[in-house]
Image (tube, rainbow, N blue to C red):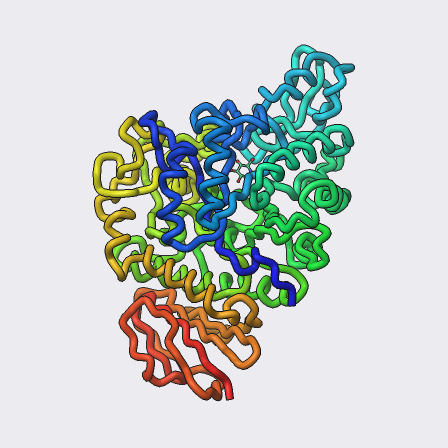
Length: 547
Ligand code: NOJ
């Protein structure tokens, strides 16, 4: 059994712009994160995944980097960053940097050089193609709407940008460029960071001429090379973002031989409310049986041969309580139920800022209150294509990335205590009811429930190592499973509805003793175990010592 530290850890994602503003300019910053380290310590997390803080013109909120070895002015200085690493270390919290190397900003010095002329030494760091019949080389699309090719007047060629025009794609075929990326990674490793989250890593093996974006033929070769030249043997956590993955591919990435990454983020469970072969904005109702199938497939297939990351939320996806829960009368119960389901599974859990408070999606009436480039580009494109305003707004309310990007609600003072200035994006008006201050002092709060789940993980090896088995497969109200390790078994039962529901366990569990580890209602541990009744969004984890 491999005992890597990151299998036992819980990661918390900070999206710095929206986390905590220390200087009143309306934008979260690194000193703001340092101020909240004790809050994170109290929650019990081990690692912070820090969304990008590097120098950036902010076309895509920092995912467009103009200098990987410097800090964005809005966020502070390199001294602040060094202090964050040091203060984290004091509290046993490691910092995971966001590695965005599929593309840079068009304001990065490499691209500024590259676009100067066709024979510039940096030209080949990026992907350039001549026009075909006076047009784009092919019909590759950008994730942020429109063609993925941008014409460069000066040189008469197009460059590739799978995201915004200000995010030109790097050419991973270029060895010199790869080595510069590895030097940069070592610069950060030498500062004592805990590892990397790797942005759209599945794209670095792309072959634009064949319109292959994800999972290109050289992807794993590049990751192995990166591993050898940087983090391999350094005992770091590495997690790759892999939207178009499947368990076979994920096993390659997270092979226990350590030649690639610790784990990947897969998105099968995140894509369930999207119509097949359509865009994320083309909505489809959620079905519990689909969720069971998606999550269970990964649990089962990676058993012993890979490692899962467990997440409901990040800065790109809507708030989980507004998605699979009920963000009105059962907000507290359903937020806790969803946490129970995820934290009971096998893998490394990730908590996205505000999830531990049960923060909800946002609905702005006015389009101008939205800030996200993906949302705004999509709105304009769909208006041009003849969609009506109401339908587009419905997609934005359900799927827009700004749902996850409103400021963290620290207390019930003006702007939720996030800033003394004008916040860069409006605060969710529900902050008087939903905020950290009131939850810290309430032992039944969502915050304290997450804290308890983390404690349970730390004191029960079965949570980390237990083998997963889905039970009640066809029940479309209850998601239930067991985890078994040595002579211990967990039973996790979660009601996904706002109704009471009853069910019989299919098989008897023979046990010496049992304990109710956690529940989101007041529960009696001695109630019958084979014939279970659950209240709206009720969740429980039982632990059995087996005969
Ligand atoms: C994935 C990131 O999570 C997202 O926020 C970003 O826009 C794209 N990659 C491009 O870097």
